[in-house]
Image 1 (cartoon, rainbow, N blue to C red):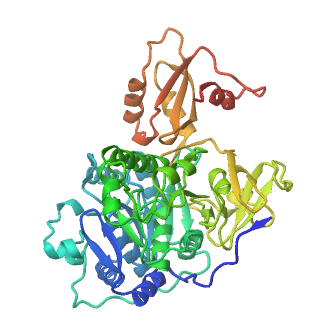
Image 2 (cartoon, rainbow, N blue to C red):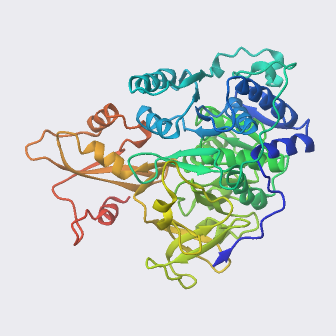
Image 3 (cartoon, rainbow, N blue to C red):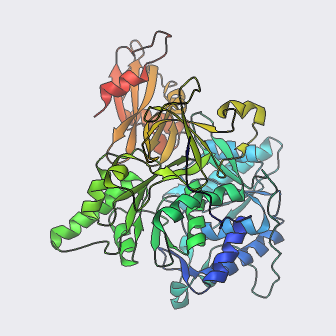
Length: 547
């Protein structure tokens, strides 16, 4: 067994306790800023969350209420997150790219009472989507969903708004003179107040249950690995609805590190926004790192002495496979320590994290060592321990372990754990002599593109309904830009009309498949390779079509 350092003594009993601690420690220090030019100090963040909490309480939101929210990465999403923690509601963050099929499923399973979203974002009508879902519930004889639309882009900011958020938040806020309800008591052991939606490896999304403690302690690895302080700035261009959003907010509250929130990422403009505000860390998926490198190279083409990120300490990588040369390339092109990787999953976020004092060889090939308080085992497929240096399935145990799946009895998930309570991750890896974890593969049939999980069976089931498709296998292939790309390998039906990638995309979208799950590569075959048991041999397909 491999173990991280002892758990630190700064863990909190509730998420709101972290907000209170930071406001008391550095009340006037800027904590949050977004790309609308708004910012909040630590004390301002606490007060904004209190006022939103009071407004939510007036709507009947509190302990036992389920609030689903689907928001871009702005101050609104972060303040709402803290406000819901303040009143003790169960919150269900949903990434903005999920569409009606997934949202309808998870809100029904969660019994959502209030849904908070934007009217439109990046050309998609979220308001119309949730109205349709709510109407379908009413038609089925179920209660309608209360909807709160948050139009952050419609705000007109004056000079005061450019300096501080104040009343410019597009959230319901109680008046300053109105009383604020007391903080909700900490949840009891195993009482989940977070439901994270993940595509996982099945067609239907799963609701992963977490407590305040399991979400916040996942920040241990990040905070201890880089020793972040209030002098640091970490831009977040990924959805705050990812569990990584709550983890990085926890890291900010624990260390005072500032967060820059970007509701949309532009490969040319966003890196310069980050640089102008003094980013000391960058992350976190491969497409973002590629954009930073390209922006820095474009600046050097104009001025050979240009340094885009002069304050950069390190870049973070997680959520997707990492090309072996990425660490060296980032260190050379952007500066700082290079790439500090982490490994985890929605069920167990940030199980490992690299450290600034790791060697270049360790940073190049590994995802870091077990985070503080995390225990890790490597097991053969029969469950027996693997000798040091041998590949096996990675099993983890620690305080950030999820509490279960929404609506799934504990008895049905017992097989996910060994006899000692270690979670079977389904990921394969090798552990080095100093405890560094190198991921070598996955037992799960899932593709990770731009740090988003795509369940291959879900895509296959939809593509198989196309009239020209007799059989289909969906596989993930390495991609320098996105980590992995989704490739559909198809055997055409006899006498069928030719099929194109665009035609498949149209068919899949009409069936409700989210855009980020669409295949990016199409291969037509006369026969699909199979194992002795008759299953499609996807490993052979990956080898055949790998770049």
